[in-house]
Length: 637
Image 1: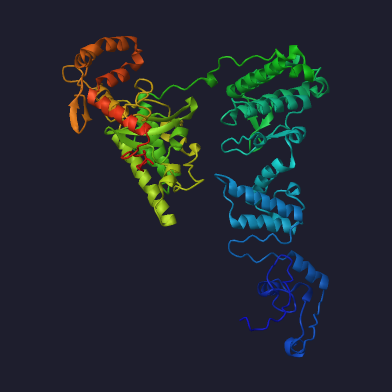
Image 2: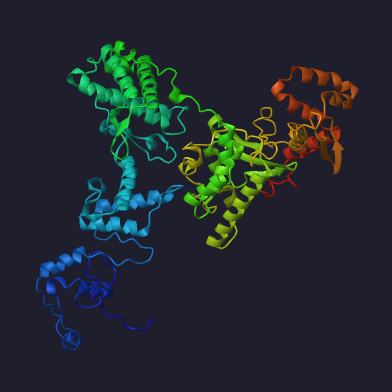
């Protein structure tokens, strides 16, 4: 090929968006030439017959005849690009909108859990912007040009990212919104944008913005967007009320007085009692939100907190708000709408455990066996919160001293990597779910996941283990009303009643044991402690025929031999050396009752077990991890 002579081509394709070379002197490439004929040849552009032997063979330019040259040029400017696999053609876009789409695609790929953007959806957005000659996505009108809903959704998500570039925090404040990512915060399952434009009064809006900004900057920044939404509602409700009731719409901070606050409180209570709609808050479908006990409580508590903090920090004086107006807002007080629900009674728990209930759940909401039923059964059996069950990791189950344990994060109380006892049936259920997840990963990618991939994956997961795809399912799918219970939502933490299919004789949770008892397997003593506690807590609720407790013998394994352990405090004391009995009496006498079982189990261990544990700890501290394994089965390095 190096010796061949290259001849000049016909230039690029006449279609503005096409990077391919032209196929003939007419201008279009092969694909756009076919498209031109399918479109009815706009402008009637044509070459003379036998153009090659008559003109090009002798090096003469080929003349082009047009019925309407302007129509042909318009077609060249408007015709879409040829879609090549894996390619998005941004040709023909205005420079600013092209840069915005490029930036949006770049940021989208960097998210740990991005939303779904199909290639066809992105191409639809590009085509719409090209057809309408959009200068910027800021000017994009969703739904125009026949664009589909998903096209507008992609544009809206890109606009959320562009606000972080186009607006500084102060400019966002002036425009009436707040971006949480300006403060390095992004709440789960929420975009960064917080709209405050619904607060009519500028000073009240600025007060709310400053309060939320201080909250995002502080060490007590909330884990979810709930408190921010509460503050926003607590400002929109009184702001809308003042817009109607106060002189001048309440825009002068000196106008609102105590009587306005009292009338607002009375109005909220009236709407709550009569079930009337809120004048300010709308649902996603555009209908008015009804004032309930919960929403009224949220508004009262949040607006009082906002106003009192403004008074304490001097912001109220700076803005000109009167003290009598601030202190007139009451607290919500005790309300039935905010109290915790009672645990389910036995008949409800039995209905939850009935085979027909989870079977109907799986058939209705989980036709592809993505783990919804497993999540439900785990929640009912363990009594843990639905969010804790959904977020468990691949290594959430294991056996320790022969006991089946369930590891999870109790994030609401700050107790991470906690373990509870679970029945064998639930252990086998979760083990089977892990096997299914592993098989799906192998089927999709053609290899078994590595240890790191497994550690990031969910156990009760509908997605194979992969980075950024470790979410299991939406809690709302599992928290559907139970038809057999007349619409009850659940489940709540409870102990299954005797005779329940999930009871397994006695469902023991480590939440029933002394605090911190065997929750963290961080020391070599843990195995022996769990083995000791197994005898203490297994079967104690069972009674023999004469009404006495039937307690199985306490044993553990020390240096390969089964060793019997003392079962009472007196037996533990008798087994100790004489010089340690006084120390034992002092420790037991000062131990809280809630921790007595844990402390007694440690003292019940033989001397050899403690020596082995101390030796193992010393070896680990010296950096020797030989023969030690992580919970996922991988060697410790």
